[in-house]
Image (cartoon, rainbow, N blue to C red; front, side):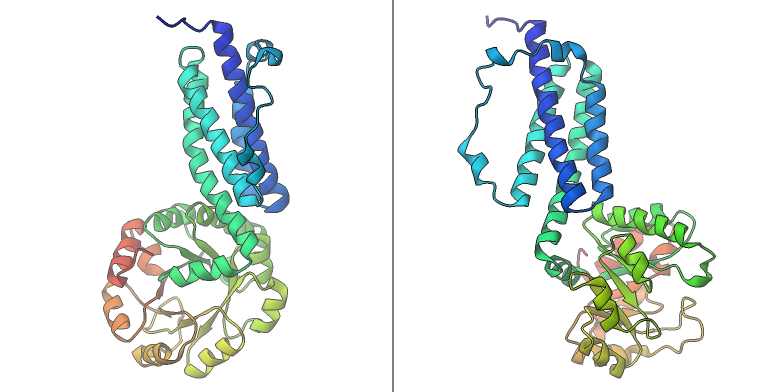
Length: 355
């Protein structure tokens, strides 16, 4: 029978993999901090690293003996092939995941708490790795990745201050929403500190689900919350000025109510437009609906993605699709639903697309 590993050998093994996991997490944390400027990702890396650090007992460190380790200093040519940040992020995320698996397997016989925590962190790491890689891709490609994702989005959720805002948004994102706008008007009664807090919370939710996050009207709030772009009404700042403030990477959307406004938005370099209101809606009291004629005109002439908006629910999708709209923007159809995830999925099913 093979020899049973001694307790000191197990302790050395656990020590090595705790070091490996914590070091890898530090690489991910520092990249999120210094290159991506993503405080939310930094906080999650740091939390994982600190949780492992609390379980890195002194007895593991005292069992360490590098001089007798046959693999100490051993490298591999593949390490020299990492030439871009995505490769470094991917390699270190894999390094952490592998180390956590070792801690989970061998920790069961030595430290049940360590094994349990390693398993929990490993599953959280999988989501974190995806978000880090998405952030690296966005940083490397400027606005290309944002615009590519925009092209895949067919359901646009607009949400503002409400009870359970984050829970509703989380559910909608689980239901398939990949484009979310935060709209907190001046008459909402919120101060800017609260608006920023809500915007940042929604930004983090969107990041976890690979969704685009847009802020309505407020360019300063969009920048502070690290949003993917801003949506402007006809009475807001001109798109050209917004572009100067936002830079070329972020998205700019514009509300339009007539073909001339649509063509002006295209000429101004907007990335997408809203077309409506198709039907009367309490969200825009006093604004006359434009009906489906404008949707047909937009379908025939728009060179950029457009979203039909205004009083649209799952039952109304068929008519706007028949008029030529492939995308819709909604508010109450999801925010007022008892089951936002199911409401989003129903809208997407009516649109015939997963997103």
